Image 1: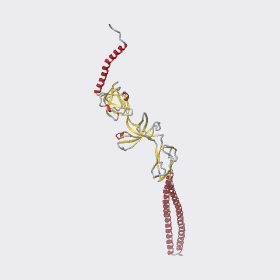
Image 2: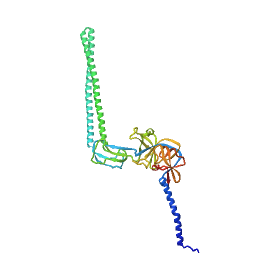
Image 3: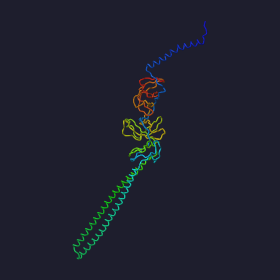
Image 4: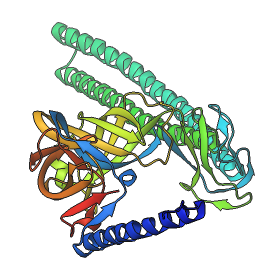
Length: 416
């Protein structure tokens, strides 16, 4: 005769059934997991991967370079004299106006040297004045002597006429006529000699005065330079800006040409960039360039290119279209790309850590929702955003853009 089971007996029976069916299922799952591991199939977390869709479009081909943001205008202030620092008016980071004092130097020696040159210049000017007075006196004396000689020649000419007249009347003699002629010739020669002497004296004294004037001009420039050096030795800001460096060692001795401070305009910036010298022929002034800082970008133009490469790189400067964008900061290391032509209607994928240069790559392509398949792909030109696909991928596919080099020994990967 059947009897009704108690609740406790029912619960025990259910527990036995669960154990009979659950243990084989768990064993099957464990066996499957072991089998996958044994086959060498690894898995990766979906959250750790970045994917790019494959599509068709245009690529503005560019050359990649590294850069450094620097102030657009930066001036190194040097000492124009040998001196020592008496006081420091500002520290690094201070914003100053044009003409504002930065440092105070000991100017006593420079002041004495400038005053000495000024005194020497004044003395030379007085010497020139003295020489000109002496020249005028000597030349005036010669001119007076010439006037006297001219009067004497006129007298001799009159005497010759008288002798010739007397000789024509028979009252004179031929000898007296000859004597008068000889005296006139002598007087005329002496007058000519004095006139030539006057001209020579004028030229000689004019040349001597010109030499002194040139000497004064040279010394005037030296004195002006000394005065300007003395003025420059009062170390002031040549224009408004921010003090980025300053020599603050009070009492220290400094030499002529030694750096004292650096003044920069931190409201405007430019980019100093460098690229592999293999791109030298494709980087020229006037070419467009893009600068990326994080997710922010700025555009500009190549202003100058250093003609010679150093250490396998070529250096160039990018002048930004807007050099005062808020995200620009001195010292940041942005990515720089130089536009080098446009390719239209090409297969492309997003740029990422996997890309270095045109060539063959092993990339993981998504074959279904849970599987990645390793595939050999040939890539071409690129810019900051996109890479040209020459072969190996088709529009509509999805590819991993992370650096997956540690997984290249696996033909497939499972996505967790």
